[in-house]
Length: 120
Image 1 (spheres, rainbow, N blue to C red):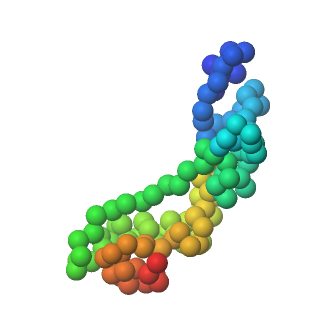
Image 2 (cartoon, helix red, strand yellow):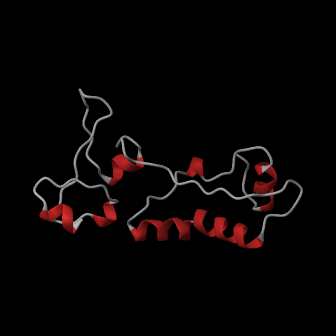
Image 3 (spheres, rainbow, N blue to C red):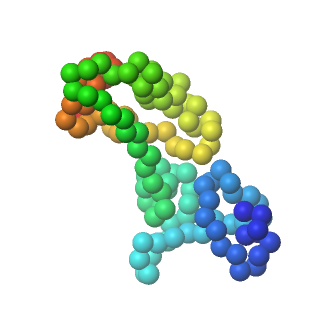
């Protein structure tokens, strides 16, 4: 971001964690006519800012086998209240929406049961 800040014609892309007072974030629109949306935490969280994105965790889990204890513990922590608070404290990511915190495909119902989570 330092090089962008020094260049009067500079343009760059970064996460909100990398913003500095020397650069400004730009409101964007999905179409020429607007509406233009500022890159606030709220707009990123509700996905109205066009450059917001979701982060997916994908892991292989053979049907009929228990979830690897390390994966189970990682997911349990990240999706817990403590894990979501830690995500907020990092100020780089936003916590997950409650409805997105559950596996939702095929054999993932078995994964949910093994993790004591309701299936999606």
